[in-house]
Image (tube, rainbow, N blue to C red; front, side, top):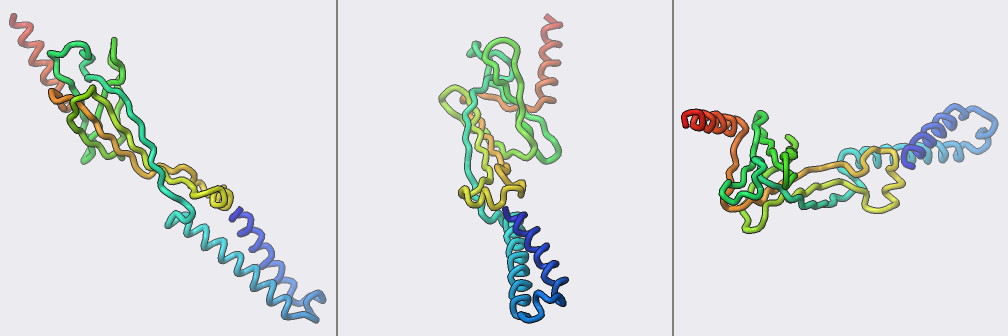
Length: 192
């Protein structure tokens, strides 16, 4: 809606400026000045609202969406209590990506966090799970939703925070460390 008012006000402003010498406004100059001023005010107001929406998120609020996902050891040994719970990570520059398993039985179904996510690992006495908290920017009400309908700011992801709640006997290791440990175990098994 704000885009329509912006376009219409620009068109009216141009029309009122170009018709300044016409017979329509020759007797009533004050009417032409008033219409030019009104169209300019509507144009500047629409532009200001668009800039405020884009820059300082006018008409928007931050809404938090939470989700709890059961996770299992990256080794796939969920049923074996002797094997510690394992959570893997991979460093990507300064960021750390966590790799986790979402499949309880059979071949592990691995997923990972994104680079932009904030991640934390905490201990729990319950079964392991991942708490995903996503903050999204949504419109405050239907008025703002209709006003800024084509702005592209609907449901924009602000941040994601992942908190891994894992058992006390957990191991968090990098993929390189896991590969190194697997090679050492293969050497020990070959010696036997």
